[in-house]
Structure formats: C-alpha cells, structure tokens
Length: 385
Image 1 (cartoon, helix red, strand yellow):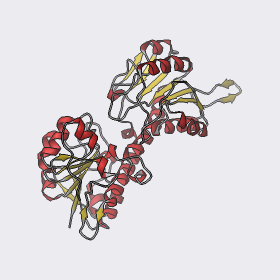
Image 2 (image 1 turned 45 degrees about the horizontal axis):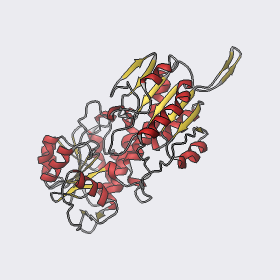
Image 3 (image 1 turned 90 degrees about the horizontal axis):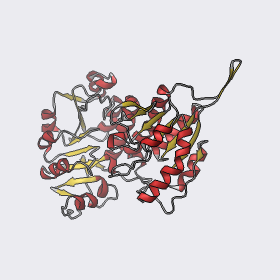
Image 4 (image 1 turned 135 degrees about the vertical axis):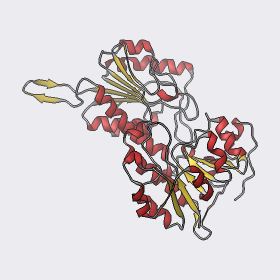
C-alpha cells in the first residue's frame, strides 16, 4: 500500500495546512495510507486525534515520515537542508522555481520528483487543482478587509438624519483572480469601485461585478496563453502611471495586484503619487513581498508614508487559514487523484501529459519543465512514463 504524507508548515506565523480531517477518507478510497506530521492542524485548532479518528496515522517527525512515505505534500517547500531526507520521493508544494535555483537544483541532485503547485496550467481541466487561483481569490477578499480595517471611514453610502455619508472610493489595479475578488468584495460592502487592467479583455468581467473599468490606451499589451498579463515596456508603464494618477489621488483605498509570473512585479505607483493622496488614505500592495507595485511599501509590514497607510503584510490567505487550507487541500487531492492508478496504487508520472509537462519541475535527476531547464541550463529528460 502506498503512503502519502502531509507535513506541518514551519514558516513563522503560518496557520494553514495541506490536509483537513475530511480529506483523509478521500485519500483512503484511493487505496493509500495517510500519514501526517504531529501538530499538522495546530494552526487551525485541529487536534492530532481528529486526523487519527478520520483514519490517518501520526508521525513524530519528518525523518520518520521520510522512511515510509512515497509522496509528501505541503504548502511551502521543505527546507533545503531537509531535501536529502526525501531522496527518490515525490514532493508536491509551492516551489517558486524561478527564484529558488539552489533549492531546485538540490531537488534534481537528490532524484526528487517535484511538482510546483503554482506551475499548474490555467486550463479548464486544471481548474479543480489550480491552487494559485484558489489562494489568490482569498487574498483578494483579505486585502479589502485589511484596507477597511485601516480606513477612517465606512464603505457604504448612508442616508441618516445626521446627514448623508458618501461611499468610499476604491481603485483596484489588476483584474486577475485576486483583483476580481477584491472588486466583488468592495462592491458588496458598498464602495464605489474603479478598476484597471492592462488586458482590455477583462473589462467586461470588471463591469459585470458593478465596477467601472478605467480605460487607458497602452497600445498592444495582450496576455499569455495562460491568461496572465504581459510585461509592459518602460514607455507603457509611464503612460499607465500618469493616466491612473488622478484616480489614485481621488481614492480612499488603492489595491494593487499586478504580478508577473516568474518575474519581479512592476512599479505602478511612485512615492510622488503617494504624497499627493489624501491623508488617511490606504494602499494595499499585494506584491510587496516580491518587490512591490508601490514605491515605499515594505514587505511584511504596515507603515505610514505622507499620511497614507501602506499595507504590505503579505501571505494574505493565511489571514483566513481555515478556508485557505480547505481549498488548498482539495486542490492537492484533485491533483493526486488525477494521476493516481488504483490498480497499481501508484502516482503515475507521465511527462507527456499537458499538466505534468509544465508542473513537474524535477524527475530522475533532470529538469522536466522546459522553461526551468533552459533557465538553469540543464537538458530536459526524454519524456517517459
């Protein structure tokens, strides 16, 4: 019987986990033994006994897990120093392969078959396993709640005997998964919402949520085949910054969600623009941890600049850890079950599959994803099953 193991997250402050007790039965139906590291659900106040009652076995530490597990699942990657423990195993987590070269090379050297959850393609077939989108959706909700908590006024319009209160003005830059959820959340709370995205094709989605789409002529922008926004030229960025400045200055809250997959995020708001905003305004910079969209925002911190609150705390889904864990755990199960062969009780690694040819980063001491292979100057292994 194959064994699938789930690791407790070690990142400071992380409350999420990759398995909830209700997921255990789904895995056992595949014919596998579920093992979890002691304290897996502590951040969600889920006891080890709850997992055991659901049919899982508890392991005291990662060394004992490495001896019995065939597949190891987590949210964040295992520490670099721990990689040798999992030689020959399958590791599935967020890996950030574009920015962790030493780590990814270590996975290859130790014959680890690694699957990067952020590399799962954005196709109809992959929607049920798209963890990047599920977590981004929650991030959009959390960013609005963070902004609301810091703003010195309410969101909705109120007509009272003491006078009429105008609705808060919210400007959202980027209408991807996180941006669209931020728009929907702000509208539900009664705010007046304007949004911008370099992809004109999302204007209809923005307007369907009740927000106004800010049109800026940037020339040819387009999007990738995965639906991500393409990087703008320096000239296009300058046009965007200038055209959106008036809207930013007039807003009570600005939320930036512009991130480029595998690259540093673009600077969209200058310190000079921040200086022109009304005192008491709030900016939430989703990309702060990776370099930021806003000049002056700081990774992991909330600061005040020229009377404006800049929120760059990051790890947004961790603010709603139960639902984030619920969605991520389901994403993981859907991925595993997609490639699980019940007859042999084996996770089938088919490098020709449209999902694994992209999401599988290392396998049999080679890089599989062609972009990663080219980035790290390693030949791609011949496709085999």
